[in-house]
Image (cartoon, rainbow, N blue to C red):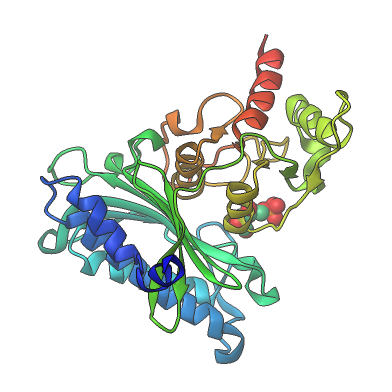
Length: 337
Ligand code: P6P
């Protein structure tokens, strides 16, 4: 009977969010509507990514984006889809996309109370070789209902109400936190629904994997170099760790969340703030990690305490299993003395 109940008791993301909403009797369902539009955007991108090889959507679009990277058509398409889905929800007032230099201020008649920061297709340089890529998003509430200004988007990560990602790989997996734990859903294409497959995800307290681009080793600072050395040549008799680096943040973070260990994008001499963007890469992944019982550290402070001053600013990031990040924090603390 229980197996049958499992099969027929489908917990879709829509039902899950409505259950969450019922815990907030005062809420008018705005967040539910916003999330449903984000989910719709993810379903569309999932279908486009899966067809990319066939529909010749891959290949360069010719323009370059604010990051100076060549824009692939799927980037452009995904960005347009999410901007339209978010604006048409009628629940947003500011959008910050990795693909757009400036923030988008929603016109008054379609304005809502949420500010959404997102990377519509992170890791897109991996599209042509079939490596998993993903959408990353974070949701802030506007401070109060005034004419929206850019400062409303420059809030510390700890103010985020929700954050998540959708990974487009062998399956389409949607992972989200609304501040009370982390839950994972898998798209059932035959239903067109995201089904709860990873309830209440908790990252192992300690892991056996480290994830970093070792090609930058010559530019690392002392503590990062010392940590990686310790992973490879442990001095306490424990076995060496495995290196897993996919080069697509959503895939590397998803593996870290499920298997444990650490994911690092450290500062280096060439890029003193590392490479990953604070608003729509570092903050959402840090929020998820903390909600799953892990940690996220910038080398100086708790990642979610960072207060951004520019939309596309970067920060070094060390995230993952609680005990492993403690080791990294100790190495940085020792250096700071
Ligand atoms: P590197 C992909 O371009 C990305 O923004 C992240 O998804 C990924 O973690 C990182 O860059 C990889 O960077 O320098 O190791 O190739």
